[in-house]
Length: 391
Image 1: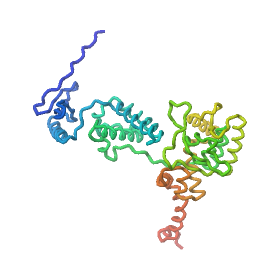
Image 2 (image 1 turned 90 degrees about the horizontal axis):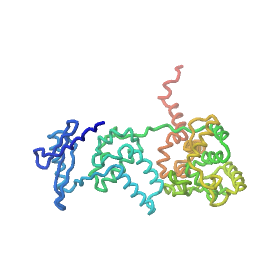
Image 3 (image 1 turned 180 degrees about the horizontal axis):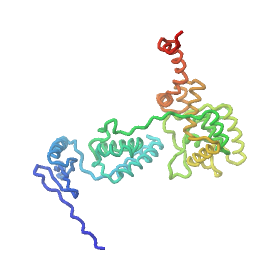
């Protein structure tokens, strides 16, 4: 088959205005560019403008020329989103190595930037504007948008772009996370879930349900962290979620508030004593050993734990179950059943600030402390008596 000849690249030409060039594109549209000479180095630079008409290009050029004169214009660069993302990851990795950031921060950023790379990886950073971000906000979602905004701020600091396009978005153009009502398992559903679980998985599910630990915190527990005599679980580490690490290793907690001692119920302590005897007979018990481990003594993979709780829910006839749902259930128990205040609940859950606890579980605090009071006061008011039957 005869190959089609390649079209010659259309070169830039003078637009009849000083320092302004124009080029005809294949689709018939026009592109304009402002060019200038760096007085310090003598090198010539060119910046493509967003305008497609001469009048708009002249106005945009005047603004850019002022930035060039005042040193506010960045040098042209063809660095792509993918290359800039790799630089950001390397920068965060260096901060992790020096102890400035937690390893989970690096893992989370790598995961979120993967979506950004899929959507914008080959796009040059300097060609991303507010319209680009707005058009992709739905595909990015809140995690992807947050990562892109962080990446573009990094590019501003590196001098690749002059400003962050995300700052120009209107409120309605930014993706938002839908606020969903937090559901919890009632006592019957929790019992069904435990009845459907098997072996060590039942112990893990019970521990999360009655301690509120995060999944990776529970999987990181070692027997030296379990104080059965005084009834505490000492949360000191979490497991890494990095896919390349098999088995996963212990990493620091994300915040200092996550380092805590969680009070155990006597029933949970009894369950752990029985489980410890089984681990001892299997040769898997020791102060430095993981509480939940494979037959080789390595920590359990979090994906296997997720599969196990899904299987237990299916056997027990319970729907929509996950480890984080069990954590919400424990929070509900602390707030509604025990009536603890927000600071006490925040310490048990390991939130960075009590305000996070209050924002997440405000409806439960309202249910526990205010609903009944509001209801009785409304009933005794003149407004509430309007609906009373007339005698």
